[in-house]
Length: 187
Ligand code: SF4
Image (cartoon, rainbow, N blue to C red; front, side, top):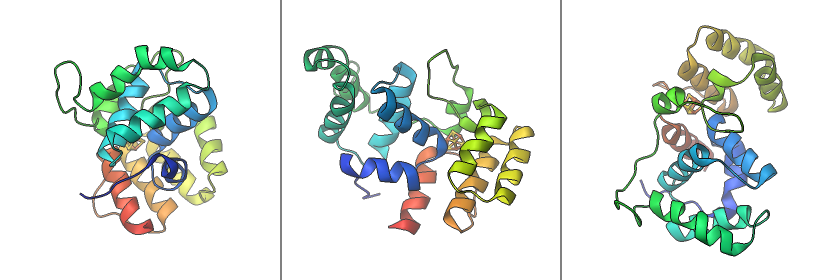
């Protein structure tokens, strides 16, 4: 692999190179300074696999969460989770990031920001969001057609292609695959 990312790169990468599921988690983190458990796990493991070191991950989560809570609370309640994702706590397993299938199957509760947006976002809102990201109307129509047939990963592939002016040989089956294909082209 060899890709390493740092906290200062994340907002720009989220816009250009993260799949919609991860962009949504980053947006929620930026606007609410918090993510619920499923989102912390999904996004934390994604960032780890994208090459964010444990030290940088602690810095990243701390800098967001302490906009809303004091540092003691962060250290007591959340730093453990970050280290846990890196296999430094609990069973010390080196947890693997979630695949699309796993994210698509996750149950979503009120206030959750995780999950596959192609599956769970209201169609009118998804269309508006894609328009605000400057995706062409033709590509949006194709994406929404795939979404309405429940082909979420193919919709994601089409979204990747529309936003990179390029094509992919294989479909999207993992958010980190999406990111790596993007990083190759844009960096
Ligand atoms: Fe994320 Fe996969 Fe859904 Fe794309 S298809 S938004 S990578 S879960």
